[in-house]
Amino acid sequence: MKRTIVLRRALLTGATLSALLLATAACTDDDMAGMDHGGRSPNATASESAHASAGAVNDADVMFAQMMIPHHRQAVEMADLAPTRANDAELKDLAAKIKAAQDPEISTMTGWLTGWGKPTAAPEGHAMPGMGTPMPGMSAAETGIPGMAGMASEEQMNKLKADMGSEFDKLFAQMMIAHHKGAIDMAKTEQTDGSNAEAKALAATIEADQAAEVQTLQRILDRL
Image 1: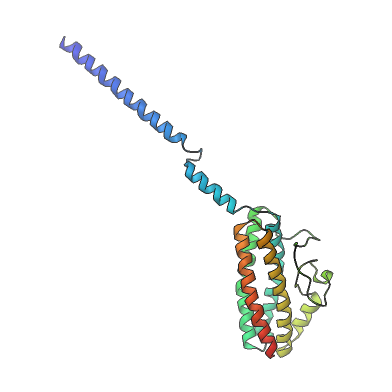
Image 2: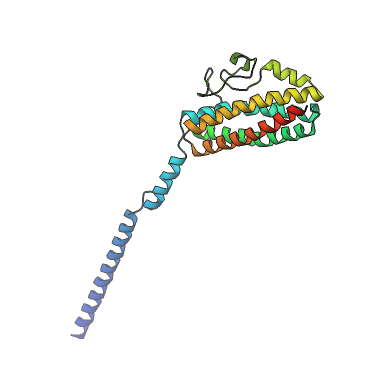
């Protein structure tokens, strides 16, 4: 009799344990139902969706990066001439700042285009909507990049490379003012038409920084 009671108790204990295990498993399954296949909660998914939206890219973003890269490269090329050809100390200092700012921005925009799966060069014949006109006295064709506002022609670059001292200083200031104004036009267009948050933020920085540099360049030019 005692043996039968003990056996029954053992069976009941086992059944209770099984029920508890099944309930635990059910809770685990319910918890997992609130997760996506990557093990993320609904809140994490919503957060990632918001991030994806902030990183959305449209044609204006792509064109901005594709056009600003060669634009920056020419500014850096001009700035590289200043240490050995310029006479004005303030102009030399500003040229160094231009190079220090625009070199990293070239790398940033190149990285964006690669990440977006887009070519780093704009298709031939494309121009950024809303851009201004090329440098005074120069046709769009002379820039080598139609519609690229402020870009210096090969002839102008050759003259800058040949000048020294105060002549270099004057031409550099004139060319960089026009160059910066072209970049400002492009940056304004990106802020209006672009979609990518990072690209628009960079465009705002370019507009503000280069507008300040235009004022400095004009002050230098006025006293040369």
